[in-house]
Structure formats: structure tokens, C-alpha cells
Length: 77
Image 1 (cartoon, one colour):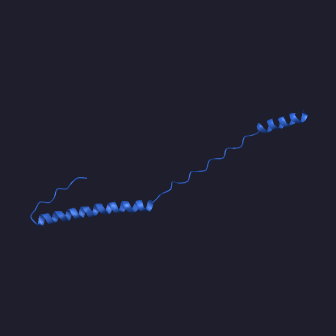
Image 2 (cartoon, helix red, strand yellow):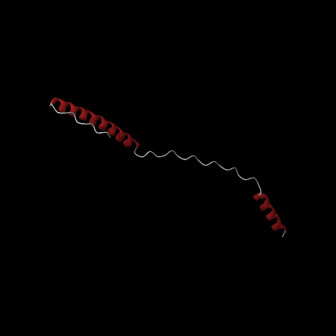
Image 3 (spheres, one colour):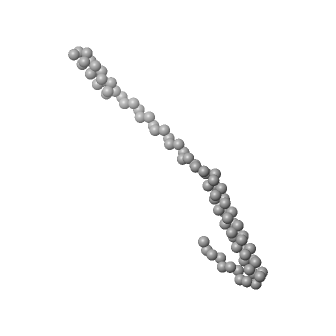
């Protein structure tokens, strides 16, 4: 009986001890950049496409004026 009392007392004393300090959660890893290089290349291609289209429109207008026609009306995007 005495041994049981001692074991219970030890259990209560250990349970009432200081709580362990909470360890901070590890920082989340940076987001994964999937196909980032391909996205950059696609953006560059879109910019080049716009430049080429503007040059083609300008050339078409020059040809129309030189052949005696009216330049085409520009469509707003």
C-alpha cells in the first residue's frame, strides 16, 4: 500500500512539473516555381508577337498608300 502511495505521489509530482517550452514550427519552404523559365520565355514571345504585328500593320499601311488605296483602320484591342 505504501509503495502504491509513493508511486502515485511521484506520478502527480512529475505531471505537475514545468511544461516543455513549445518549439517554434519550422518555416514553410518557399513556393515551388514550376516551369518559371518557360513562363518567362512565353511572356517574351508575346511581347515579340506584338512588336511584329505592329510592324506588319505599318508595312501594310505603307503598301496601301503607295498603291493608291487608303490605309486600313486600326482595330483597338
